[in-house]
Length: 230
Image 1 (cartoon, one colour):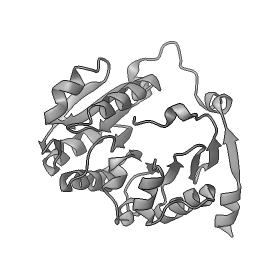
Image 2: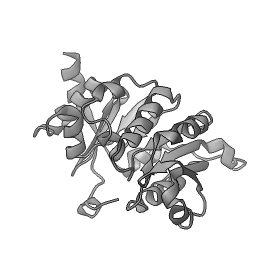
Image 3: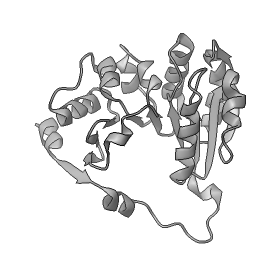
């Protein structure tokens, strides 16, 4: 019954509602007042992902943005970013390797949020990094794209995470976690993923659905222009 009640209590949100949630910044504020974000993104062939993610973090107001990328693409990504601080991490075949875990966990200790997954590719090393972040992070973690793909068949890793998790799957990524595509009743599908993992779920689509302990929302701000890589 609790699941049914929560599933039905969906609210519609738009630009006005989102703006109301954003606090005004004090005039005397400085960059240290607005959080430190760690981004773990990118691989050979996917150098745009960390650039877009880092620019988005800056644009939405993060005070300090740290962007960790595989050594193989460090020069490319660093040359395209001015405000975020880019640093190289150990890699294998152009993707993050498990040798990157100690440095990642060290940086996580001083961060307020983490995004992992955009353009990481798929490998055993990437899976090891994703699992380490979820098991050790104390801050909220956004798990996106290949971060989700890395846990195909291992949904228990999300359920056992040491930190609050936000999952951002499209339909294919949803199916890799749940073993089936979202049903026609997408609100119910989003809520089932929340129940299975304990994570807040942002199910991408024509109408983006956001469901979790903090409430259930339908975002109607999207348009066909968003139907593209990145």
